[in-house]
Image 1 (cartoon, helix red, strand yellow):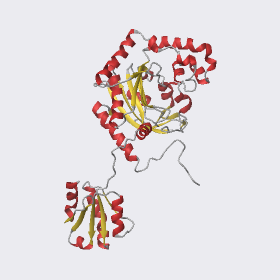
Image 2 (tube, one colour; image 1 turned 60 degrees about the horizontal axis):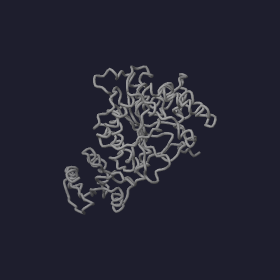
Image 3 (cartoon, helix red, strand yellow; image 1 turned 90 degrees about the horizontal axis):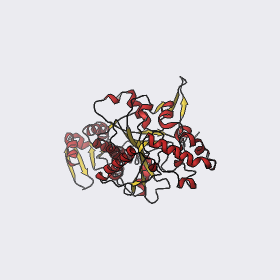
Image 4 (cartoon, one colour; image 1 turned 135 degrees about the vertical axis):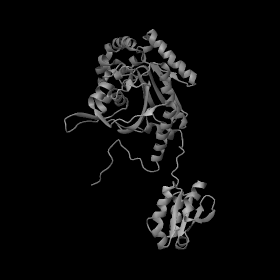
Length: 422
C-alpha cells in the first residue's frame, strides 16, 4: 500500500529548505531591528477563539477550519491564522500589565485552512506575522507596514506595491454599514448565497466577494471615505504622513477590505506586480483591530498587525528571478586510505566538528578516487587525506580544493589550520 502526502501539503526537501531557513532568519533579524519579540502559541486552540476572534461570518470560520473533538469532547481547531492566538495569549498572560508598552510580538509557524490548493496556497502553510498591542499612535500603523515592506525589499523583490485604505472607527463603520445595506438590499437576490447571508451580518464582506466582483453594484457601492467622521479622517491622514516621512510609496484603494471581522481604521495589502506571479497578486495583508482583545476578555486595547505567507513570498521571488544567497557548503571532507586510518576516522571527524568545522566522510567503503569525487559533489572547501603512514606520524594532508594548495600539518592542528583559512 502506497501512502502519499495529504492533498494541499508539501515536503520541503534539502536544497530547498535552506531558502526557508534564510527567509526565517531574515524575518527574525528585521524584527530585532524593529524591536519585536518572538511568541510561540499552540498549533491548536479552542474553536471558540476563532469564532469570536476571527468572526463567525468569515469564510475561514464557516468553510476552512480543521476542527475536531478531543477525547474530552472539547471542540479544538488547528489554527487558521496567527492574530487571534496571539491576542488570546496577550490576555491570558496579562501582557497588558507590562511596564513596556506597546507589546510588540512576531510569530513564524504553520497554519491550516481547508481550501482549494493552488500555486502558493496550501492547506498547511507557513505564516510570518507581527502584532503591536497597546498603542493608538498612527505612526505604529506605518511602522508595521514599513516592517513588511522592508522584509520584501531586503529579500530582493522590486515589483511590489503597498495598497492602503481606512475602514474608519466604530461610528464611521456603522454609518457605512447602513449605506451598504441600503445599496445592496434591493438586488441582493442577484448575488451569491454568501453575500445574501452577509447582507445583515457583515455587509462590508460583500465588497470582498470573489464571485460577484464584476456585478455593477460593486462598482458604485458606497465608499467608506464618504462616511468617515473627523477623527477617522485625521487618523488616516496621520498614517499616510508617517509613511511619507519614511519614503514609503503607497496607493490608496477605497475598495480594499480585509476578510476578518476585527479590523477597523487602517487596512492594507502588499501586492506583487511581477509578470508570471499569477492572478492572485496579494502577498500579505493586515490592519488595525481595536476591539479584538476586548472581545477575548481583556481590557480595551488597540492593536495592529500583518501576516505574510512564506509560500507566496517564495513564489514572488521565483517570478522575479531572485536567487537567495544560500549555501550548504562543506568545510572538510575526510578521505582515508588503509584500515587503520579508516578505523580512526570517526574520532577525527568528531574532533573537527567539535572545533566548529562542518565535516563529512565516506560511509560506503569507497575507493580513494570515489571519495575525492564525493568531496567535489559536496562542494567541500578542504579535503583532509589520512593514510596509515600519516596516522603513524600523527600528521594529515590538507588540500584546498579552490586553490589546489596542499600542506601536511600535525593532526591536532588540522582544525585550527582550516578555521584560519575559512
